[in-house]
Amino acid sequence: MSQLRKIKFYILRLKSSSIKEVVYRIKELIFIKRLQSAQKKILQTHINFIQHIKIPNFYFEWDSYKIVNEILKGKTYTLNESIEPISEIEAQYRSTFFSDIDITKLPLDIRSIWEPARLQHLAFLSLYILQNPTLANKDKEIIKKYIKRSLFKWFNDNPFPNGLHYISAMECALRIPVFVYCFKALDDVLSKEEAEKIAQQIFINAWFVFNRLSLYSSVGNHTIAECIGLIFAALSIDCPFSKKWLDVAIQLLKQEAYHQILDDGGPAEQSLNYHRFILDLLWLSKNMLEINGNNELKEVEYRLKKGEKFLSCFYYDKDKYPSIGDSDDAHAIAPGVYPIIRSNPQKVGYYLFQTSGYSIIRTDNILFIFDHGPLGMPPLYNHGHADALSVILIKKEIPFLIDTGTYKYNKELKLRKYFKGTKAHNTVTIDDKDQAVQETSFIWSHPYRCHLERIYTTEKDLYISAYHDGYKRLSKPVFHRRTVSFFDNEFFIIKDSFWGERTHKFELNFHIADGSMVKKIDRWWQIENKKESIFICSVDEYDFNLTKNFSSPCYGVKSEINVLHMKKYGLPKEVYFCTAISINSPLNLKTLEEKVKESAEVENIKYMGR
Image (cartoon, rainbow, N blue to C red; front, side, top):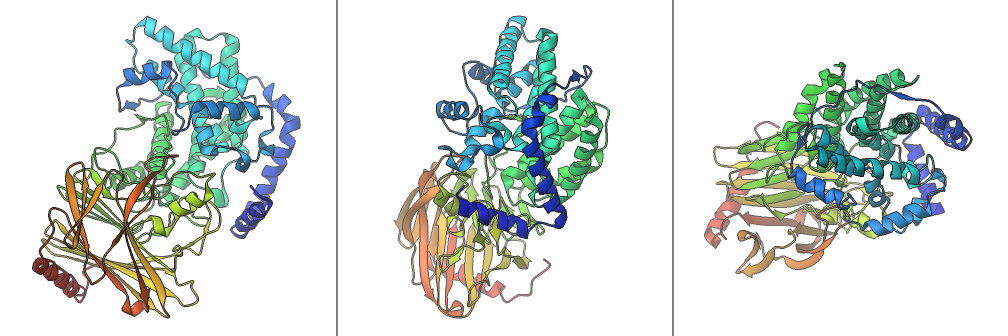
């Protein structure tokens, strides 16, 4: 990171830090400084495994036998990056003390480099053995040889505390369960020295994590991941720190179950991917403790069930969900391996999550999401996107109007800024500005607030109104209100209105899923994807333009997509957008006018509840 960016980063962190946090950060710096001289003593610590540790059951989503064979042939998890350049960069920094490495100077995104070092391909193999006791001895032998060879090669290639893989305490913590799984799978083929080597790796990583816990303003999904590493370490090895690690981890997990899972089950970080990640980590922590005779996380089970119900409202095509907020395709255990059986998608209905800020409409054919939630988890709002009042539309499990995703956290900073920003979401930007201020690749300032105003329902129709104050920071503040009217299970009227002062530029965007065909039929835009269609039109004298921009279907991948785009200039009270969406066929002019009139009439009815 450049010197200027470093200074800016530390100033922002300092602004959000208490005196206690400043003291904690200083202690962490001292710990890192002393680590180089203390590492030899720590590495000589003699550690024993607790032989009777039990591993909970896991649930495999895919054809496990097929995945096992792919891993044995060299498959690993790299977030769509080639393994060769990752290996070259790892080798280049193998003898460099971790804190001396400037990750901004690396040619690849650090998240992509870290992914294969989570060793989750070895977790998959180990759990496959442990949960298939009838597996043929010949197959077991082949898999065990692969695990053992790969695990000890990683130990030799990544001596603590040098190299890229000790920069993040979270990354160290996520490897600890893998070491435990490997030990259990290899138990009968390990020499005494090899078993001690694995135990030592668990110890050194847990000791390191405990001294670098993500606390205070850094509390988030990292904290939960670090705690699971401490729990696995405390239960699996016999050392003087085990009880303290366990007590601190359980205390933090209880705290964070109520902090990061909101009262309605939604994510404080405003990210569906990270919500899935922390729920899996919490379930895994609870299951691991309980199978080993500790029920201290039993009290958070109802909180986890709330989180599961929340996520199930977003599911389509089994357990897929839209990319809302940051997504780095993280897995608590390994891709396709879960600590619990996933919930089924919720049934037809309207679901309101007022605390986390989502209205969800589910019919037999569609999933519609209206985001009227906050920016993210204060004080830094790291994984939130500026997507206030954005909408997403999926028909018959096929995405049509999408959230564009994340792409990458590091490198290509202009694209990082775009994907986090308001223009990359299905909402309105004003004066080309985001709804909040991007200070760094993760940190936001001037967070907006959304206000849910009205919900009006009849047997057939639904009306929702909300506004946000993200542009009150302008020299002449502007406020944005969006109303969503839903008729007869197949028509939407979306109206955007504004109030404030002075002339501004207003820009509306609807991002269309990759692979869709877009064509004009009279005044309607037809969007076709996999032989299904929806229809969109502007209900005034202005029309959309068809432009191009990017989406990111998974981490590290971007593709060009179509965007329906419209600009208007004027005084806030004089500018509005009115968009009609028909799920099955374009409406004739008379019917369209009736629906717009009906929507306007509903605006004058007093709301029924919030």
